Amino acid sequence: MDLVSSRGNDPHVVVVGAGVGGLTAGALLLKAGYRVTVLEAQAYPGGCAGTFAYQGYRFDAGATLAGGFAPGGPHQRLAKALGLDWPIDPVDPAWVVHLPDGRQVTQWADPAAWEAEWRAVFPESGDFWRRQSKLADLSWDVSSRPFPWPPQSPGEAARLAASLRPRTLAALPHLGRRVADLLPAGASPMLRSFVDANLLISAQCTAAEAGALYGSAALDLPRRGVNAVRGGIGAIAETLVAWIRAQGGEIGFKQTVERIELRDGRAVALHIQARRRAGTRRVIACDQVLANVTPWALQRLLGEAAPAGLRRETRRLGETWGACMLYLGLDASKLPVDMPDHHQVIVDADRPLGETNSVFLSISDARHPDRAPAGRRAANISTHTAIAPWWALREDPAGETAYLERRVRYTEAMLDAAERAVPGLKSAVELCLPATPVTYQHWTGRPRGMVGGFPQGSIFAARGPRTAIPNLWLVGDSIFPGQSTAGVTLGGMRVAEAVLGGGRGPGRG
Ligand SMILES: Cc1cc2nc3c(=O)[nH]c(=O)nc-3n(C[C@H](O)[C@H](O)[C@H](O)COP(=O)(O)OP(=O)(O)OC[C@H]3O[C@@H](n4cnc5c(N)ncnc54)[C@H](O)[C@@H]3O)c2cc1C
Image 1: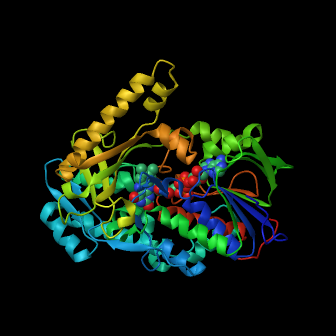
Image 2 (image 1 turned 90 degrees about the horizontal axis):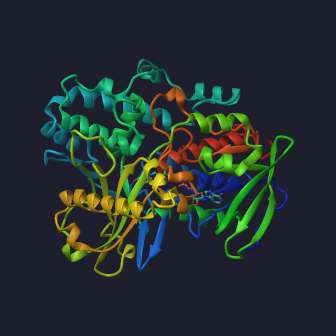
Image 3 (image 1 turned 60 degrees about the vertical axis):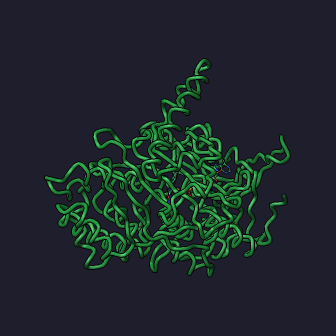
């Protein structure tokens, strides 16, 4: 494809990767007058929140449920800024949590229904939910305005100060606290498991580590509105791609950026491998680069030229989580009727979560028949997993059999766990594609298949988008506020604003 933009004389922003974070920042900069080119290694956009086609199914690659579309939410604010509509349908209940003791907790969107639910299942937890909901209100309030955290320039410090309100002061005593500090001393193992499992999928850590403010907002997700996306979650990214193209921006699929070239301390060009024409390498010039990748991937793209600070960062950071996933084709006639589509199962309260001891099951919405062939439903089962054991087997020349055996063990354990939520599920499986961190590395370009960004523990450890190179920015779930389509949308808005210098028009920065 020809990547010459119709806005030839405007400063040129190149976005590496068509994840939701990169597309959001790219779209906002296009609107502000920049020439924008997005380069995506795969044939479809969305990365971890993409949807791929296989044998008549449309499978969600990772994310299945999307929040942040309610008034003031990141997706709603972005839609307003760009003048677009999202193809979404609300989901209520958001999901059902299946506790190890066999009880179920239904995550209702309606606050009154939710209060009745926790009163019935966790009668000891009233103080906890009252404090959680107050802190969640504070967090959502702050995040509904530009909130450039951590501030990385005097302009951002000023904007951050302007976004605070007198009521925000109530958050100050909680800045250093964890969600575990809010739980009653006598909290039952089931309440602890419930809270931990919810935080693991939203904050990438459990109550002992998750910051009280971030974690409270994360626990409130079902009440803030959760949605199924028509055509699959990838339609969020597809909507942004269509908007960017309609406004004269360029999107190049099957274009892998192999190297970011620096000159005099600035990013000046991108070296690209076009997959369609094997061996075809091209170079395009840029004024600003938004890297929708992890810090490890950014280091690879910079090679020998990677700044010392970035090298130190990638050495210092521990590995983040990986995911194992099953993409399932189900015979719809063998599924229970009128059941919710999303389930979280905790198998054993005495074992750590993840590694098949907790799984998240999503079945495609019956309102969206295009997700599967007639009479079928597409489904996902995922579990958090440590990446190192998978790679140890993969990189061992004699490890292939052990790697495949481990994948079979995980597949069976994930199906067993999901069967606890949806009896008959296993008998409905007609197609089963397993994925491990090795698969995620291949399809999302994230080194070692690390997904979900950094655990949201102390807010003071959060990473911002700046790199030591003034016109090179990180965007996506490695920067605050981290994972989820809503989280990376907030991050993408913040990056666009930082590139714009807080409201000034396009410049060469
Ligand atoms: C199993 C799983 C379940 C999840 N569940 C949910 C959920 O239910 N709800 C939710 O909101 N979030 C969920 N998430 C998290 C959410 O999907 C991610 O946080 C978010 O989509 C990450 O967006 P990103 O902008 O960081 O980009 P990414 O998703 O990382 O996408 C980056 C893109 O860049 C491309 N790329 C990378 N390197 C290059 C290169 N060198 N050249 C060209 N292109 C490149 C990749 O191909 C990819 O398309 C889940 C994630 C996983 C893995």
